[in-house]
Length: 250
Length: 312
Image (cartoon, rainbow over all chains, first blue to last red; front, top):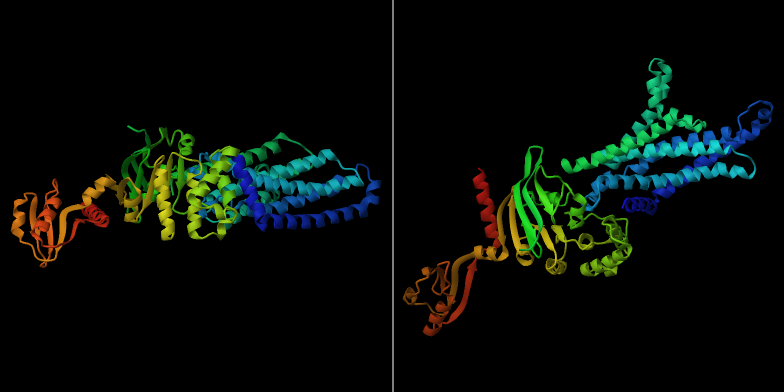
């Protein structure tokens, strides 16, 4: 039944032009950035050959590409998640789910996996670009896999925040704005951390960006992975609680 | 005794300090069609939402088919089909796709689903529009899709919140006959503020006002209440009233015009036959004879205003 909800979510996205236009825009911009990275690489290739331990193809092309993708997804995920619950509540279709033999957990997980399906498609499409380099060059596949993992963990965290905001908000736009704001705040936390040295450790720990970059650089640390997993689980549990609360008070 | 499908005990529901439903208890058995009647804002929809698990009651308990709605919500909800006051439709889907989704939500298997969809479509007259997008359908058809959704998984209990709103008279007739047909094998609760609808399609009636249950009757009981023990008689020539003095059950006779009479009688015997006999034998020319009934509207109004006075 989780699957039934998830597949309907995904289907609805692809029935409307929303999913298609997001995929197209994202792919176009990232492809352009990808090409400029390749351009840079070919122009500095000669100099790189003279340096010991020089950054390779993966460092120069894949890392910035996934870094850019993460910022694009920061903008896009709130748009994808905003409708999840708040629109059902507005259109009164939520009662269909509430009176079906489903627990709140199943409803929330169905919604979450539906949106995660869409985000997985996006991550896969992004990954195809560096893979095309295999035709003429060599990639550090371990690092490449770390980048895919980092981006997947990141989008699931984004999706869980978006889902929670959609549970709270009465209107999809409000859900989008608030989840975007929260994500951006968590993203820029470590900029301020650089300014005030005292609270370095706390802000560093909370910042999404720091953990994302750690995994991206190929350093698989259980702290970073558990950060994302805990992050996602926390907001999913909050969403479930919130949906349960709907029955208690209105 | 038939098993109770719904047993609601002492249900109350507060929105902050406002009490929407106040200590309501009732039950529903198989084969009953229970009409929920009340003015706007009486608490009909709140009660129905509580029965369907969309809203938790502030106090009280609900048993659906023997399952407690709070402790075993899944088993309880499997026996329920619910049509809210606004039909819950995903407008970007076609009718078929939507019904399939509903079937899967209720855990129907692949084969069961197509059978169930076909049955629901033919019952609600949706065969011709099955491949159209719900958003392009008229209000009446959308309402019918909503009903199809509620009866799709063949639930023991069907709860319909104002099912005939927005339908044209022919469609209303069809829905009413559908409700009657379903009522044979299911338990149905329907809410409405149209009084004649209750008379036509329900076997039991409950009137709710300001959150309180003020009347609980079978339809025949209701019809009895509507009896005013008065017979209206119209004749061609005027009647000699002395002829009727022999009939003991007649308490009084009103005579507003020459040929119009209102004959009041006791509630435990009906003198209609005797009256006809006397008039025919005397050759006064019987033109019309009908029992005067209080309309269900009158009962409704008298009950609701009485209730309002009591609460003052």
